[in-house]
Length: 320
Ligand SMILES: [Zn+2]
Image (cartoon, rainbow, N blue to C red; front, side):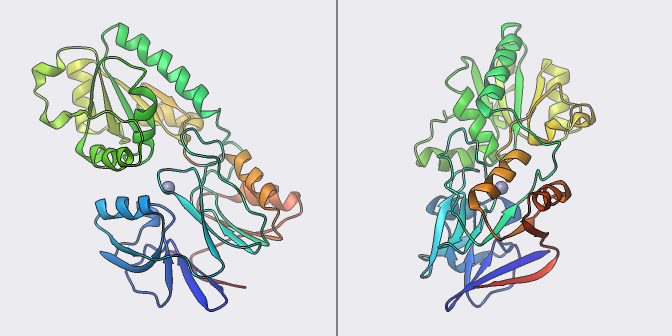
C-alpha cells in the first residue's frame, strides 16, 4: 500500500490514505471512491470538498473538514462530483483521479509546478479514448435502436460517478420507464443536491415482475461481471441487452471476456494522451506517478526529457 505525505512550512498532509491508523497532521481526501477513502469510521482535520464530505458520509466515513493550511489549495479535477487535487503554489500538484476531457464538469486548471504527483490508471499508450460526447451519442443511437424493438437495456457503470453521469445524459434523451438500484440511488441524491438533473426512479428490487413485462425499459446498474446472477436473470427472462461503459473497453479482450452485449470506452479518468497533456501543462521538473501499469507513460515522459519515477509501496515523504 502506498502512503504519501507532503510537507510544506509547518504543515504535513497525508494524501488519500486508505489506512485506518490516525495521522498527526492533515488528511487530504481527493474524492469519495473507495480506493481513495480511509477505511476508518471517522477522520479529523480533513481537507476535502463539501461534496466529498457528504459522499463519504453515505459510505460510512464521518469527516471533520477544515480549511487547507497556508500555502495549500484545492483544485477541481473533473473526475466526479467533488473530486479535487491538492496544490502548493508553484511547487506541487497532486492530481488524485483526474479527467481533462470532461463532459459534465469544468475542465481542470493544471497549475505549473516543480513536482507533479499524478494518477496513471491508463498510463499505457493503448488507452486512447474517443471524446465522451461522441461515445454517448453513439450509445444513445444504439440504445434507441434496441428500445424501438422493445428490448430492455441495462446500462452499467461504477455505482458512484459513472452511473450518475450516464443518467445525466440519458435521462432526458430517452423516453421509457427507468429503474435503478439502491446502491446507485443513494449517490443520485447527492448529485441532485448539487443541481445535477437525475430523475427519481423506481428501484428494481421493489418492482414486481409483471411491471417489467411492460417493455421497453432501461435499468441503470452497477458495473458487475456478466456472471452476476441478476443480470443473467434479466437477460433470460426479458431479453435485456447488457451495455457497459468503461475505459477498459478499449482493451479488445474486455468485450468478449466480460460477456456483455456492448461496451463503450467512456472513462472518468485521463487516457494516455490526456496524462501526457497534464504533464505538459504542469511543466514540472519531477514527475511521480501512482497506480496502474504506468511503464508506457514513464518511458514516454523520459523520452520527452522529464525526470520521472513510480511511487511504489511504502511511505513516501515529499518535502518542500
Ligand atoms: Zn476515482
